Length: 352
Image (cartoon, rainbow, N blue to C red; front, side):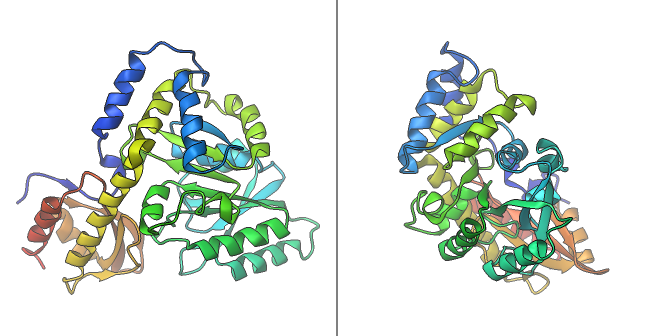
């Protein structure tokens, strides 16, 4: 019926923002030192220090979110150690055992709940359970949280602060998977990047630009420089030293310049709210979680999902609830337009 596919299941289908494309071209025309000793990476360090209001930090530009998370975690996760995370966390479900591989056998210990985020009381309970006997359990190395969480919801600052205090009391490091950190930051209004991270006890942040305007650019920010020293020993061993680092750093510099990263995230968030409001008008769909970023999760029947596919609307098949019901994820990006969303709704009206 409709020949043109509308891909609305992930923000990684989006293109590259013009400013970042220009930055890549500039880096290509500039000869500078390789392996992170270039002028673009040096500039990136200074930009990050300014944005996060902290001079005492280190950065490592990366090209993969999986590598960014795994290298960050392996800076404090040992082969005999463990990381506590939510059972739905990307590092647990979607990274092919990469954190365990990078750390030489470190273990992920999970907390499950319907909230989609770790709660302080659950974390305390988990730590107590592990430490009760001590004899055969792995040493807890730290905690990893995802901002936004995998169900698109937000860790408020007070939740992060509570988790951080538990970490510090138990000599644990706190890592934040920030694949959609920019979306989370925008949704919190006037909160600064510093207030959202190290000022509430985050030791390292894996921040992603790829989903939000870049070609391939991720960044590990070590607010705790001790962890950066460990990571620098591991980066070559794990195959993630980038000879032409300038191309990654140039993307990040353009992304951060004049608040572009927040502007793009704001567009994606606004698009998601518009889509949510439109989808909520259909009785066949049930919106499951608050839309606090650029993701909308919808419960529907198998039949409804098949109808959507026939309309050449391609969301992400997220989860199976039971024999008859599914969870489908819709994701907007900075490139999504209201006219595209209107087209989705018009198509849906032919079936629903």
